[in-house]
Amino acid sequence: MAKIYPSLISSDILNLQNEIKLLEPYCEGYHIDIMDNHFVPNLTWGQMFVDEIDRVTAKPLWVHLMVDNPEYWVKILSLNANSILTFHFESTQKIKTISDRIKKKNMIPSIAINPKTPVEKIFPFLDIIHHVVVMSVEPGFSGQSFIKEVVDKVDTIVSYVQMRGLKCDVAMDGGIDEGNISMLAQKGVQDFAVGSGIFSKPDKIKALKKLYELVG
Image 1: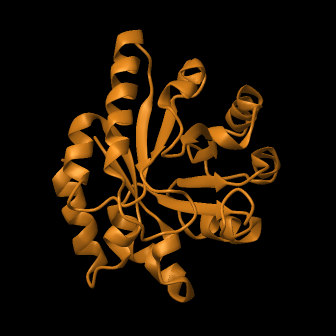
Image 2: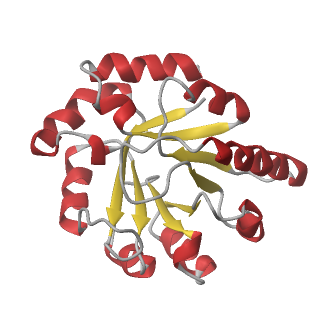
Image 3: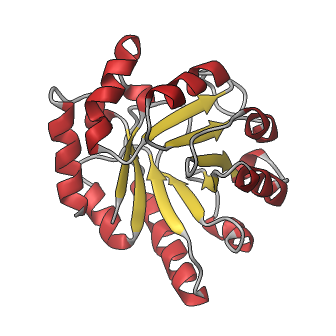
């Protein structure tokens, strides 16, 4: 069954705790972007902010590191068990080392690829990392339009995983909404980070429920 993680970068930040509590009964957990203004041209939250979100929800977090130095963030973050910690293929050459360190902290290692990165580049790591995030926008800003060309990457990953008999969840982040989520779920995407598709709606609970109906 597909899982939906509301992406808090699109939420009402000044009312964040209420936003979290509002959606808590209806979602799998929450997606949090960490950006360093180097790897991507934007700056978001630090460790204290993430720790506070982790404190106010019992749900797992999906933390997405869009940073030049993911090793540092893996070292300082300690999240609820089974939380997902995503780092970018483009940000490091220490992929196995980072994955091992994430596992030791009882979190799920996850690797993301940018829209322009050939998907085949991550194939050598799918025996140790079983969660792949296909970016469907250029990383850095919320509210961007979905890049349709990346759907081919989903087909390629799913075919590769099935052919090799691997256990690997495919996730997507960027521009996910009612217009594409059903198609993506049918192609094999299991985890969705959804920002504007929930938080731009007047009734956020209704929007989230509708997305679950479309992937059910």
